[in-house]
Length: 431
Image (tube, rainbow, N blue to C red; front, top):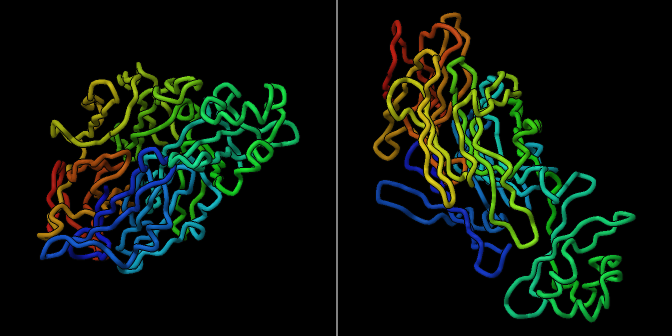
């Protein structure tokens, strides 16, 4: 669930992503929007058809991609696209293709927005499966999976595939594995040699109409840079990020240099029988260079040592020292809080005071203004992002140089500038 100001001013709207239906993977329950107003909460009926068309949602965030004061809803899907539902004064429309994302199908997971190149427009960072497994995908040779209720038992069967000679698509799992699930294959294929040389279409010709194909053209965890002109450019994150599936991820300036950084958590130990655990990753900090490129800190540099199955990850200034900290959960492991012990200068703690129905100013955009009138990277106040996570509404901003003001764009588009005096370390901006 993630909340955002669909209508600009007024109450928040909560997106609730539909989860998988038990024993029917990859089918999902429908997603919903719920609106808040002065009288309480009500289900959205305007966008039902739009949401019904989006299957296998895995992550979401509200982010004002074009700076018009109305946050877009970004939804990641597994075996699908990173979908952009553009917000035109409270009406959502699927503009995924227009934003340049229709070529990138993946096993997308958590998603966050952040101004990684400092141009004042939110970019997207999206978790994916990575390149370090026997699942591989490219635009020309996507990863293919078929599913269907082949045996008419009410349970959907999954057929993983791989490419053989002449780019023919064949089952990936051995006959002994897939045959235990679908016994007719033993009789149909006869032996391992014949099975291994047969295509999916040949083996399942009798059941072809009951199968549905899903494809992933990339398994890379990606940064999509927002040009500010309504289009994204794909940027691959460093190789270390691709060593394992990425789940939790967040943006923040962890070294206080006025450039946004990234923290993310990896690993998936629980996989199907026959697949090696995808646990070669860790929780890592990537120091931003301000142009969409990063330096990956090793454990000795960052002090972060988490090798379990990292999941939810959120940032906050837990000890109120003007530096961003983070907390990370682990499947079957301890939740860990890391306090920022860097020698960076203290930042400005920013607290918003908006309206009664949106007290924390969810959906607002923040930037620091330097004395030379240059502006720092844009940070958004959000209620839900990443992997089932929510950051503190009180954030910490750092300037590259001495700062003189806080710039705020409120939901709906109103802009205010609030002066900062001397070494002021905290400010409450009132709408």
